[in-house]
Length: 472
Ligand SMILES: Cc1ncc(COP(=O)(O)O)c(C=O)c1O
Figure 1 (cartoon, rainbow, N blue to C red):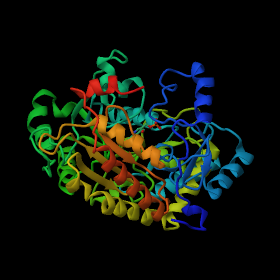
Figure 2 (tube, rainbow, N blue to C red):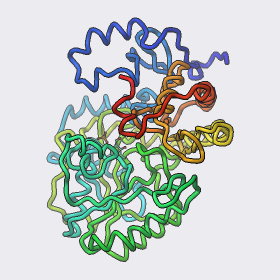
Figure 3 (tube, rainbow, N blue to C red):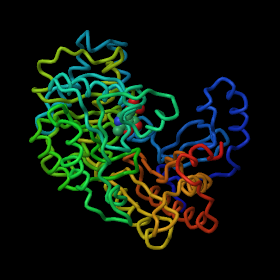
Figure 4 (cartoon, helix red, strand yellow):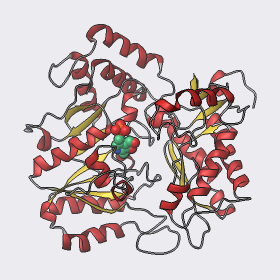
């Protein structure tokens, strides 16, 4: 495609990866990085800057950016209005600890948030990252109910604090590898998954409410429901591979919450602010009425780090907890977040996210039938995944194939989200990515998949092996 509109520039990779300049930078700096950060096999390039929706590497290669800073840059490179709002707040306030010294920037954002908050959510606690927001929510739930236990769903991700990593994050194997301790107080059930049921063989669609049967009839035999403070759930599973429960699931989950007095806490760190084509992902269903809702990532609108815990009067009005951090709701971050919300409310952003969802399905869903190793294709707004299997009969996960497809995509100029040992490849572009650029990327992904399945890599005997043995 040739075009004069710079927004529609398409990616171009002209060197092997890493290119010579990126390789030189790795060689120069790796001895000063942690082992994990000096592992460049997943992303063999050094970003030199961004141009529209492209990442430009040190060798001049360009990649369509389907990572968008892991969702924290939802409007493309920080938009001028967000930047201008942050600059003005810097000039006025500099740094301030908003949880202790009230300031107009923080209070302005509280007012805006309460204005868009769904249901009974009317109170705001300040935070700085998704991890801290989750930790705070767990404390709020325990304080409000005077109960110790939290129910979570397997495959969710809640950040890197020691407690949540050990108890409820998708990196649970950290415990068995000795990096974190076992923790008490977190009870995990499988995430509702219509493609891959923990209870049945074969590909879905399954009735994912079976998970609630398990919770209702079996788990409560071990865990007294009266000891459960609340349920912590991602309304759309992000890191775990883009799963969206049905309306029936939400109705039944909320009925359980009402019956036992469990609080419902939605971790919308990854799904908030338009990511799923609605301001909050929960608005894709009817009647979800959370007690707590967590914001992060896109909430910053590509500006300074910021996160928030929204809660009801019942949970937050009488709390004695101070759960903000030094940098929570810093004035410039607040101003940027507010400009981001204004952008979404002005129109166009949510519609574009829904258009990206439509294009993803249109281009990639046919591969479910055409390619034996494409197990499932899922998209909810501008978060999307292709799940790879060795074959349709066994549905055995194919992490090596996913990894190979990711590299084939990179060579074609598509920078998506890939992790070792996972068998879904994900896209999380800016909500404002031009549909033509997105469609082009989807076509390149389809091409990469067709190419890789000609000679699929050998899968290891189990997924843990795949993590340990993936090339480094
Ligand atoms: C659902 C969810 N919760 C919490 C977090 C942690 O957020 P942060 O990395 O800002 O600490 C993430 C990060 O990916 C997330 O996806």
